[in-house]
Each structure stands twice: as C-alpha cells, then as structure tokens.
Amino acid sequence: MSQVIGFQCPHCNAPLDINPEDAIFNCEACGQALLSDGSIFDNHYILSNSISKGNIQDIVKNFIKKKGKLRGIKKYKITNISPILLPFWSVAVSASTHYMGYRQYTETRTRTRRGSKGQTITTTEHITVYRHVENNINEKRLVVLIGRRGSSMYGYENAKEIIRRDFNKAVPFNHNQLVKTEKDFQYLSSEIAADAANQLAKTVVFDDHRAQAEKACTKVFDCATQITFEGVYFVHIPVWKVDYHFKGETYRVAISGNTGEIIIGEIPVTKIFRMIFLSLTFLFLIGGGTFSYFLGYSAVATSIAGIIVSLLGLLTLRNVFKPMTVVG
Ligand SMILES: [Zn+2]
Image 1 (tube, rainbow, N blue to C red):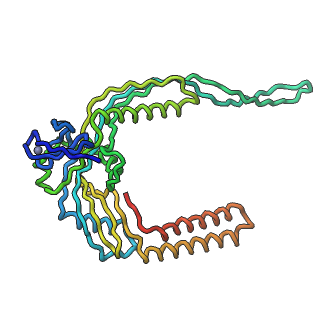
Image 2 (image 1 turned 180 degrees about the vertical axis):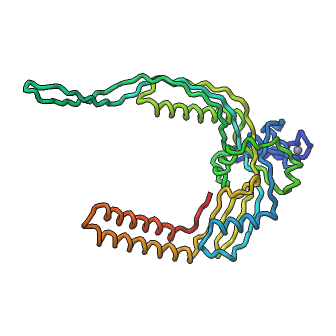
Image 3 (image 1 turned 135 degrees about the horizontal axis):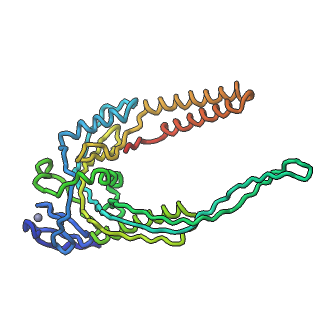
C-alpha cells in the first residue's frame, strides 16, 4: 500500500501530494520537477507539444484513411482524448571497453605431391586455428530508459524510440509554454531516480559491449568497460491517447504531441477486409495447387514455386482471423 504525504511546492507553494513510490514527480500547478523529498530537480526537458485537441480528429482520420485501406471504416466515433506526459530518462555516457580473447576457426589446406609412379596425389587437411583477438570499443551514447517499472501505458515502449531519435530537439521544460498549447496535460511521475537511471544505463552499455566482444571472439578472456556519465536528463514527451469506437469495439491510438505522428495505433479488421483476404488466400492456394499439379513432375523448381505460393496463401489467411491491425 502506498501512502500519500502532503507537501508544498517549493517553487509555487501549491499544495502537493507525494506518493513515496515516486522518485521524481511534477507539481501539477507549475510543472516543477521535484524529488521524493520535495526538493527541486532542474534537469527536466520536454519535446514540445505542438498539437491541440482540435487537430486530433484530422490526425485520426488520416491515420485510418492511410493505414486502413480496403476496410470501409466510416462511422467511427472518438470517445476519449487524454493528453499525457510520459516520463523518460536520457543518460548521456561516454564508454570505452578493452577486450581480449581468441577466435577459433578451421582452415582447409590442400597439398599436391607426385607419387612414386609419377601420378598426382592430393591431400586435404582440416586444421583448427586459434587467433588472438584484442580490441577496443569507444563510443558516446544516449541511453533512453522508461521512467516507470512495468507500466502498461499505451505506446510507452514505442515512444522510447522517438526520444532516442529526437532528444536533440528537447528543450528545458517550460510550464507556461505547455499550457498555452493544452492545459489538461496529465503528468506521469518516474519511479526511477536519477542514480538508478545511471546504473541502468551502465548495465545497458556493459551488456552491449560484452555482447560485441562475444561476437568477435569464440572465447572472451577479459572485457573491461569504463564509463563516464556526461549528463542525466528527465524528459517528458507529450502523448495524446485517443480511443475511438467502431461497431461496438474500442480501438486505441497514441499520437506524439511533438510531431503529430502515430506512435502506435489500432485499426479494426472489418468484414469487407476479411472477405478480400479470404479470397486472396483461395486464389493463392488454388494457384499453388495448379503449379504443383501441372508442372510438379517436370521440374523441382516449379513444385517449390507451388509450395511458396501456397505458403503466401496461408500468410494472407492470418489477416482474416486477426481482430485488428496494430500499426506503429
Ligand atoms: Zn509548483
């Protein structure tokens, strides 16, 4: 059970409720990022929000039009629009690894000599060769981590890619700027503190460098990584979570407030769509059968072609049974 402790924001004096499980959270009134003891945390960034509730209709409409072709989706209704700020950590590290090991491989050697009767004798030998491997990995990297443990927030994992791609466009968080675009953004706090984010980033880089060493060697003797932390940033991305209703079912779309792009979205598989794919499946299966029947005995390649076309038929059959298509 989590308890809630009353506090006052050190920045704007608004009353705050702190959940002890939050390592870092925001004052709802002024947006100030705060640590669990109520003190100020300043390294707070955002990918600025550029869309409003008014844009949502158009974005969803375009999404369904572009990704939901051949489905005849017309009478859908947007039932819920929630603007949320999803929390991430961006950890900038410079890392260098030195590793040593050996690589084992087999070499084939062919020797030719002349026999006693003047004939040519060829012998082939397979020799196991061990080669010493020693190398360095040096890199500067931004490790992006989600701020919550096991959160099932829609689109959270996919938004991570956007942070990684666009972190250079992140700006210091500005509450006034944000509320100008939308005043109902809900802040999600981070359960991971800055120190823990650093440790997690370190593990990510260690594991990755170790994996690279293991790929380069048959056996790694030694692998040592040194890490310098160059900055740890708490970053929010504005995400618009949209629910829409179509023929009795609800579908979800997560839209980046920064670019308006679809982070992840669901599109219904309609009856029309099922029929089209079912017909395609039959065509492929019949095509595959015909190939094999008429040409199968004359050449191996043609019966293989028959099998491939039949497999294509089975692949299209998958589309017939899916409840929805997920794009993102
Ligand atoms: Zn405040």
